[in-house]
Length: 75
Image 1 (cartoon, rainbow, N blue to C red):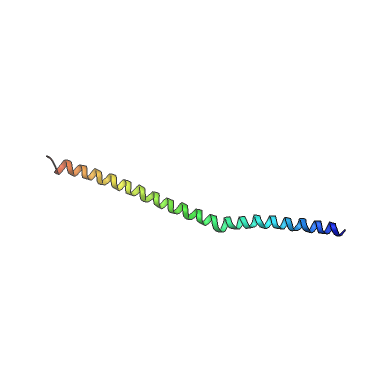
Image 2 (cartoon, rainbow, N blue to C red; image 1 turned 90 degrees about the vertical axis):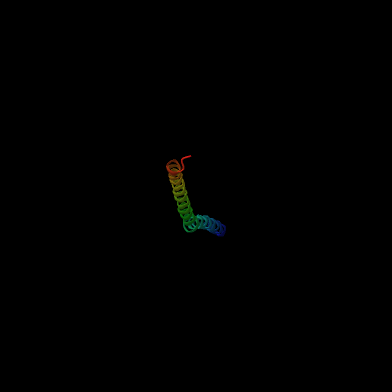
């Protein structure tokens, strides 16, 4: 009878340990990985928008310079 109780207690502790590991991983995912992922997507979106803006600005400056060259710098 005593060995059955000991075996049951060992199984119970193993079950608790495995559940706590899952809860710990879930806690890590919720409190650590998710905010980092959100920050990464936010920063990458900002960098992408800034790059697009700079590319459009460069194209506009090049068009304006070409127009000025045609209009004022006739050789």
